[in-house]
Image (cartoon, rainbow, N blue to C red):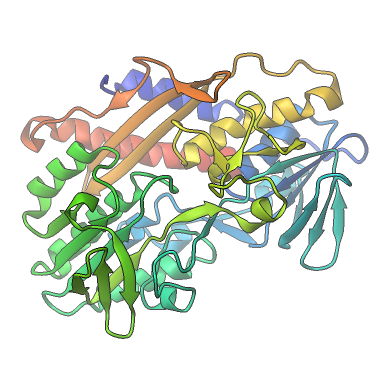
Length: 430
């Protein structure tokens, strides 16, 4: 693996920011109809790009929430480094570009009729559909963990209205002195592979000052995780023995929770009492994708690697966390990067333009692990006949080493992370 350089960061950031300076245009009243479901990293990026690159196309975005709370940077709320308004974004910029925004929940897709039924009773027709519905949580996959239990042991893994992340933050603030915070982390695949470990870091960052005798127990269904060495180096240097990570091969898989008695129960029956519980359950594609028959037995949607057309419905292009695209991670950057290729492929036959022949997809995933301390992983991917492949020697992770030798680099990566977040959210919503 190679080390991310400042030049490399600039190149990758530029790939996200290509459209930032494009002028506003008015929505076409006639012509091909592109319908986008889901207003997150994939859907908002797709709608904005379509309006800029294909002004002759009518673009409608369906999203139930009137503003978007990002999952990236939600962990910084737990660390006291961000507030909810700072990660909440308006759809007004997309409206100004001519995207028709419909704030309703899409319930059913009729792929044969090229129509979508909304919760409010309206039916929308389309020529092409970009589906970016995100994930759903597998309620009941962990015994005792359902929507009611999530109010006691929040998952804080879906932006929604922001109430889950603020609930978890409030519980951390009320943690008894020397109390125990427990996390249950799922097996692969799941949204944002480094996310749980950034969360551990940000919780420790807050507790180091507010409750230094507290303990964090992280129970993991896996034996390893993204950027593991970098995270564990930081935990040892910054937080001492506050954090204990328990891998799956050491009975780290949590199979049952008891919210009334504040218990995590492991695969082999060991009970762990926690004062604050954060349960990140197993996941699959959102219900609309599964109900439409687009998902396979894994619960995720197989797609064409060059167009992101669903294998089960060629006029529906599925992007973001809902599709199957390993080794690309389920990340906001991948959703943004792939959205533009999906739109170009979807609209090629409707507009007479040439579809992308050899697309390239980027991922950069930054994590904050402490004050002025950032780390990252970078990947570049291409489609193959079998799916997707990482381009050899194209990416890498941050350099490992003691903080005393790398403090400037860690500080720069934290700055790069903030710049990435500002750039990608502009690319979605401006």
